[in-house]
Amino acid sequence: MLTDPSRQLRLLIDSVRDHALYLLDPEGMVCSWNPGAERIKGYSADEVVGTHFGRFYLPADREAGEPLRLLRLAAQHGHVASEGWRVRRDGSSFRASVVIEPVMEAGELLGFVKITRDITEQWQAQRLLRDAQRALRHTQQFETVGRLSRGLSHEFNNLLTTIGNALDLLSLRVASDVRASELLDAAQAATDRGALLTRQLLAFSTGQTLIREPVDINTLLQQWLPDLQRTCPAHVVLEASLAPGLPQVSTDAMQLQTALANLVANAAEATLEGGRILIGTALEHRLDPDADTALQRGYVTLSVCDEGHGMAAEIAERATEPFFTTKDIGKGSGLGLSQVFGFTTQSGGFVDVSTTPGVGTTVSLLLPAIEDPAHDR
Image (cartoon, rainbow, N blue to C red; front, side, top):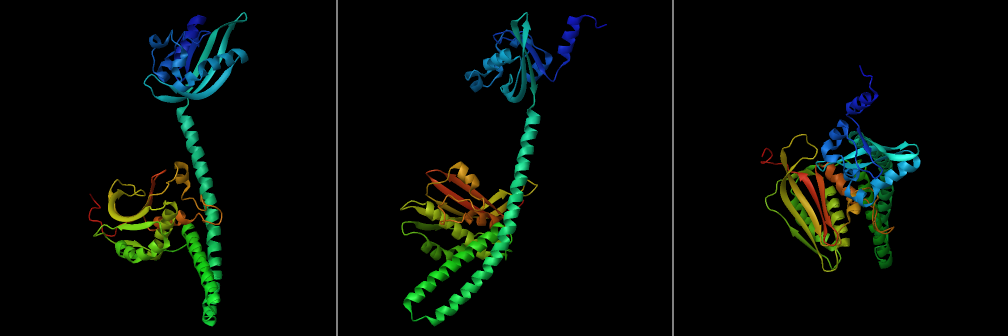
C-alpha cells in the first residue's frame, strides 16, 4: 500500500519522465535529479548533484547572468516561467520550457523547484506553420500582383502599338526636318523601352507564352555580342568565353535575348571603371531541383560575370522580387532579374546567383539540354 507520504512523493517524482524535476539550493546548486531530467538532459544524478544548474545554459546566456536572473525573479515574484535554448550532456541544444518556484519555510528561502520540458518538436512545428502561413500570404500577394501586371501589360501594349504606328507615319512626313527627326527618334526609343517593360511584366506574371524552339546558344551569342557591347559604357569591356560543341536547348530566343540584355545592363551598372563583364557558356550536369529522383541531367549554362561591387546577402535574397530595386526612383523598374527568373523557369531551367561584396556577381542561367547523353550517369 502507498501510505507513506515520502514514498508517495518519491514514486511520483521518479515516474515523471517527460519533465525534468529537480531541486536547487538558494545559490542554484543541484540537490536532486529525477529520471525525467536524466532522459532530457543526458546527465546521471551522480554527474549533476552538487554542481550549478547554469551548466545547462548556452555559454552566452551564462555570461549574461541568465540563470541567476531567473532565480532572483522567482524569489521576488514567487514564480517565473521562461523559454529558451538549453544544452544536453552531448553538447546538442534543445528548446526548453522552464518553470521555477521558490521553496519557502517560515518565510525563509530554502531553495527552488525547477521544472524543464523539452518543447523542441512543438517549437519547430510552430516555426514551420508560421513559415508556411507567411509563404501562403506571399504567394497570394504575388498572384494578385501578377493578375494586375497581366492586365496592365496588355493595355500598355495596345497603347504602345498605337503610339509606335503614329510615330512611323510622322517620320515619313518630317524626314527633311532634322530636329523633328531627332524628337521622333527619342519618342521611338521611349516607346521601345515601354515595350520592354511590358514584356518584363508579362514574364514576371507568367502571362507571356514562350515560343520555344531548338536554338544554339553560342550561335545566338555571336550575333548578339556587338549590340550588347554597344549598350555597355565605354569604360566597360565585354568579353565572351564560349564552350564549343554545346547541345541545343529549347527556349524562346527573343526572351533569352531580353534576359541576357537585362543581365548585361545590371553587370555594366555594377562594374567599376576599367572592369570587365564576361559572358560564358558551358555544359554542366546537375540535379534537377524539381525532380523527385537523384539523377543528374545536362544543362547548358549561360553566365554573366562582373567585377563590380557585389551584393550583400540581404540584398541578394530579395534581388528576384518583382519591383525590388536598389536604384533611385526612375532609374530602374525592379523587373530585370524577375524577368530573367520567370523566363528561365518557364523554359524548364533555373538560375544560380553567386555574389561577393567587393568582388563581383555571377548570374547563371541553366537551361535543359535537348541532347543529354550523360542523362543516366
